Every structure is written in structure tokens, then in C-alpha cells.
Amino acid sequence: MSSIVAEVLQGTGKLAKENIVLKVVDLKRKLEDIKLEVQDNLKRRYVDFIPQYLRLDKLIEDIDDVTSEYESLRSQVEKEDLLSRARSLMKKSLHKTVSVGYESPINAVTLKNGLNEMVNTQNGLSPATFLFPKCQISDSVKDLIALLLVVKEEAKNIGPAHAFKLYYVARNICELYCCVVPTYHKKEIESIPQQTAFGSNILDDGVVSTAEKSIRQCLYQLQLLKNVWAEILPVEVYFKSIGTLLNTCLEEIILRISSMEDIAAEAAGQLDSSFVILINQSPDFFKVLAIDKTDSIHYYVRNWFKFQELQLILSASLKEIVDRWASGKGPLAAHFKAAEVKHLIRALFQNTERRAAALAKIK
Image 1 (cartoon, rainbow, N blue to C red):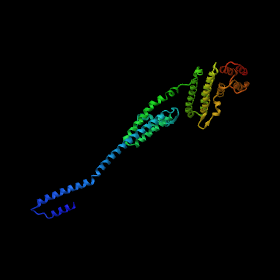
Image 2 (cartoon, helix red, strand yellow; image 1 turned 90 degrees about the vertical axis):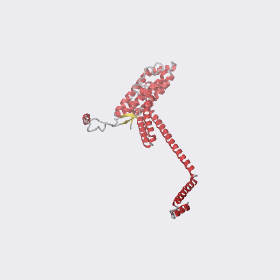
Image 3 (cartoon, rainbow, N blue to C red; image 1 turned 30 degrees about the horizontal axis):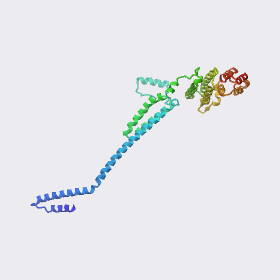
Image 4 (cartoon, helix red, strand yellow; image 1 turned 90 degrees about the horizontal axis):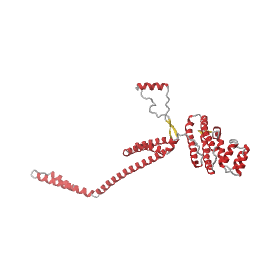
């Protein structure tokens, strides 16, 4: 190609008037030849590269599709994980509470300023206007709010193509709470306002399971009161208050059992198991912060030892009962009268000579 160019340049330097037209035509023809030669060289040089380039372009498109699918799948997995964590939090107990919010004491100056602002708002709103009031909420709700804040931060960090999906996740969590909590905790919510009582038929053989359920319900109510009172009442006042309520429960149980005419052996065993639950869990009500009064529970619960003696009677033999009576000098005699012990023996044991002998020793 360089030879053609040189020839053209030489020819243009020797132009004559008589052959100028021929020279121009010849120059045009030679330029067209140069163009064709350049095109041929380009085709020969890049003919193998073009298919590879097209395949690379297709590969890039496929990678873009895979990346898009991965982001979509990752977003879906995160969404399901967040909803699963939210459901787990919603199933936690509602009555383990935590204090939140801010104190907003109202004094005379604050009240006066508030009244003035109702007329003239030029001073702006009170600094406490948008503060969450101090109260107690379920610990699980606090964790759920923390999870919603995590969702918000994720939405800020993720790409705009998926940020709106996390917004829907946060909205769905709130809607899920309104549906799951009232349903999952239905029995718990319905029973809390009701004061636990022991009905006259609570100790019948056929409803021993109801007795255990009622005992657990009573313990649950006392635990709720502990959660609230322990932070509000002076420690000694709290111990006396919770002790009085627990003593009332024990007194009612003792009264019901002592009035029973007949207690089957199986029922006595089941009642004994239920009372063990009450005896084992009650001391926890007398542990507040660093103060432990479990060793002094009998001081706050007047019928504590009497209830323990009743529990022992339900599982004891005739000989063990007589031994604990100890001719009116044993621990059983310190809490029960002879007539009460005889009545319990008649209710628990069949009429045999051994029973008659035991009754004769209870004086």
C-alpha cells in the first residue's frame, strides 16, 4: 500500500494541463483501491476475533443475569430469616417485662408553660412532647423493635432494587405481630385478669389435673405480681404482701383437703406431686435482687410448715403419721389438732385394725 501512495504523490507533482482530467480520474481509482485494500486487511486481521468478542458479550450478559438472580435469592433468604426470627420473638412470654421510656415529671412551672403554649405556640413544643412515656413492655417486644431497626439499617445498605422489599418485610412483621400474639397467647391473656380460686370440687378424684393446673395458675399470678411489686414496693413491704397472698392460697388448700371425706390413694399421690411443685417454686418469690429471704419464708407465710406437714401426710404410711405425731409432741402436732389428723387418716386409709390402732394413738 505504501508503494501506491508514493506513486500517487509522484504523479501529482508532474501534472500537465493537457492530462489533468485523466490524472484526477486515475487518482480517484487508486484511492478506491487503497480503501478496498484497507478493508481486506481489516477483515483478514479481525475475522477470528469477532466471534470471540460476540461470545464474550454473551457471557457478560449471562453474568449480569446470574448476579441479578443471586441478589434476588439473597434478598428472599434474608426476608424469610427475618420473618422467622420475628415469629420466635412473638412466641416468647409476654410477662417478662422491661422498663422503657423517659420520665416526664409535671411541676407547676411546666404546667403553666403548657397552658400558655395552648394559646401561643411561639415558644415551640415541649422537649418531652415526642418522648416515649416511661412504662413497662414485654421483653420480647423490645427485642422485636430492635429487629425492626436491623431491617431499617439493612434497607439503607442494600441496593435500591431490593430496599423496598425490606420495607415490606418491616410492615409484614408489624402485621404478623397483630395476628400471632393474640392467637398464640390467647389462653394466657384471657386467664391473667381472673383471680385464681380453688373451687369446692377441685380435689375430686376426677379433676386432680385441674388442681395442678390451678396451682400452676396461682404461682403464675404471684410471679406476675413479683415482677411489678419488686420494683415498686419497699423490699420488706413486698415480702409481707406476697407472703400474705401465698399464705391465703395455702390456707384454702389445707381447708379443702381437711374437709374431704374420702381421698383415693391415686388421687393422694397426684396431689402430693402437685404440692411438691408449689413447695419448690414458692421460695423464688422471696428472692429480690441481692436480698434472699427463702430461709425466712415461714415468717411471711404463716401456714408454710402446716402445708408441708399436709403434703407429708398425703404420701406417708400410718406408722410415719403416728411417728410425726409423737404422742402430741411431734412436728405434726405443732400444726394440726388431733381431730384434724384423725379425719385425714380416715379419708386416706381404709377401715382396718391398723387404722384403728393408729387412730387410738392420736390423742
